[in-house]
Length: 559
Image (cartoon, rainbow, N blue to C red; front, side, top):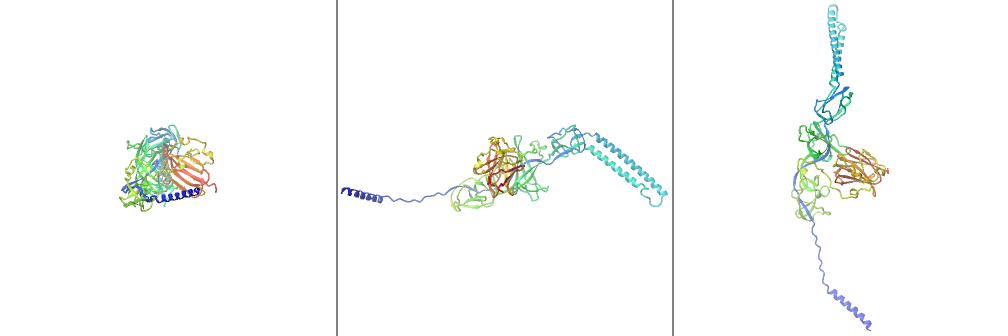
């Protein structure tokens, strides 16, 4: 009996204890979570006057470059002391003297022929007077011209003119034995020296003018709007905006003022750029000894003065998309606002219409934004005008450069295939052997011709069954290629080139190339801009290296 009752009693006591425990618990107080409004940095809008600048690069060219040639056949008997490569001369200076003895004899012979012709004309005139007198005494009626010797006198006059022409030609040939400078200039190279026999038309020297120099500057068509260029600009009488040229010369940075004098007649069909021509007076500083010479062939940076606009300066990070910003009202609420972005300059956005003086603009990066969202604010100072815009002269800076893109495996990781430098005009790889055997020093040994050239644009062209692209580079450069797999990619490294292209990537709708990506692979010690072509099919392009960049063509092997 005890064995049956004991478990039942234990069970009842347990149930009673559980009920007592439940009834004795303290009620839990529920609290709603408190969320703090996001803290954002805001910047007051400040309206300023901003002088716009357009930057470009180009090579100094002479105003006139001429091949000086001999006009007579003779031996060079003497040359001028400044008839050497690099020698200066003025208009009319004697550069060479040729042997003149033969031509002096020809002048004497021609003078004798003139004397003979004059004598014959005098004789014919005397005989004509005698014939006229005889006819007046013996003849009747109107005399025949032959009787009066009129044809004979006409022939004598013609022979005199021919003899005088021969004398003039002989004197001209004698004068041409002295070769004179046609303008103020400089000897680029000489081809002859004392004792050499010349024939008519043989080149004796290459010379160029030094009164002023010109620089052709490629400018994207959309940046022409920043410059004050009249519609009739280039008619020969117009003078455009001022330009400041600068270059590294003799170990120092120097600058030369110039003026835009004309725009060339059409846009470049490959790069879609307009070439502006800047003129620099007295490039060799013959009248300004305190200024270094602007030598022909020097690669220069140019800063061209443009319009002065009234706008607000904001950090680039304040832009959302291409033309929107976040404005914080007096109640600390966020609102999206459309604005007119005049220009992106370095890390600064110049905003025109859309903002009022004193308004607060959010400059913090927010992932999710809803109109009217409540925020907390912390005010920061507005950005200052960049130094190269605030001053009227100085070293030019690279403008309109996009920030470096987000890290990408192809853009930041060295390729597994070897990198080979190229300097030939055309490269058409056909197999893996074209890229060569592994060489870890290949890129290090390929030095660019001129550092800090600029990648201006990468454009997709109409190539039919091919994918054709134009890579426009301002300045001299070399390049190297490599191949990546899994997935298939082709890489072109532009050595000594800084990325200034406004687009980090773009898609290709059809053809062997799926997408093109652009990034600054390396900034120091030598800048390298990398182009990565994501491929739909394996294959190597045909690359043509021209004066303005690269022409890249991918053939569609499936067609």
